[in-house]
Length: 173
Image 1 (cartoon, rainbow, N blue to C red):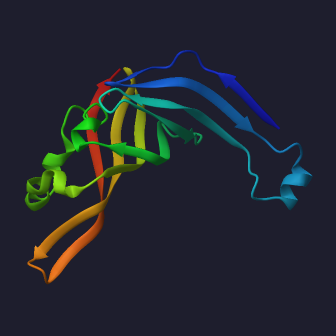
Image 2 (cartoon, one colour; image 1 turned 45 degrees about the horizontal axis):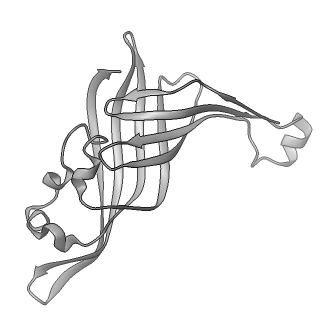
């Protein structure tokens, strides 16, 4: 059995927006069937779209909830999203240009990094005495065209990807 319901208009998570939020609940129709089909455990999930204005993109995300845990992580594997520069994710990263966190040699490479592909994103939300807050943001950026010469023509890194994880203070939204 699958139940689904809209949860209103969504809201701001810092400079990004959580749009089209939905609650989805799955439960097998009976215990006997579940005992023979253990891969189909009951689950409660939230789905929606993370809109990132600085990049002009919307990302489909999902979060499964766990009872007794005061945190929920929206996550999504991303395909087909190219970025002109890491600064496009400034809204997701809390205003920072992620390029400044790369090793100096890669920062100097600039456009030589080649195309940038967003491949994964997550936003963790916590619940405190003052309500909801964003506790962390993570994303993985693929740089398939990157050619980073570490030691002349003898050693080079190709097809690099970087994971950026940002842990935030309790910022209420």
